[in-house]
Image (tube, rainbow, N blue to C red; front, side):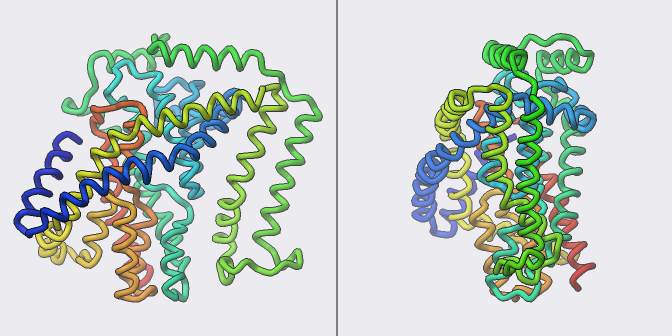
Length: 454
């Protein structure tokens, strides 16, 4: 699928650019995006990747990931039947989904890449995406997020009287997108054109029947080490349980102080003035989440007798390798997308689709942002900002755009980064499932916003 789309983007960029007399812009953008992929994204990711992969290593070695996976085993087992319930991939995926919901972008990506690495350890056909990978990315590209922070910030900066009005509509849209993405992934994986190889099918059958699976050497070695480490863990003493409880209560106190500052005789933060308790609560959780994770996980690991410094360094070492590994995939995708935009391809598509969309009542002013959103985060943000300035921060168009921006994701970028981290070239139905989630989110956003804000 990506093979044909990538080729189409490249050819259309050259043809449309030549017709419009913008071949120089196309060439310049190709070089610019190649540089952005390496310097602006991959190299910039190294530090963040090292930090969160180190913390993830501690969570895994301390048994925290296994506890998390066990707690939500019934739900995850239904969504990912191909993954053994106690496998580290379950916990990794859960931590990534939780980070996305809280809007922790810098933390969510490394956790997602770690999840892909864990899923790859179950892959009998390296280079080809498994059903679990496609389903996981369908959830990831649905843009699950409780508070669309960036969209709210743009509306507030443009003097909106109620910038948080899109919170409810965004939650509804992103929920519909996630459900539709999973349903579409489950449907597409059964189609002959998207079915995996015979080895992959046999693997899935073994997992469903509870039979042992012979994983690749690297994956088997990693799992064997994890099991060995888990068997040597010391149970928490009573005083360790007390320490963890006190630590959690401390953050609970900080949470209450941020949500109800007046009760503690403190002024309300400038960015929280006039906001509902729900928005305050989610915003406070988002602010406290990273400090909590960076301190609670090492504390828990220490109480389980894990050598936290050594394990953190071993985990962080993977960050550099992953960041370098994704460079070719990022260059390929970002160059194609950048060339297509520079050639005027988005404008051409908008003109071609406008007559049809007018007949079904879809605002054509939203079309450029909707078309760019799966391709480019910065590009769609630019279109969103321009819509807000043009129509007003409290207009129906602005709120539709904010809801769409807050409930969708840059699908092509996510697929390039996540699949690139484990050298997956045959992505099967992952792209279609992700785009289906985006489409549902856009349609629901238009319908819901008309009903709520008209």
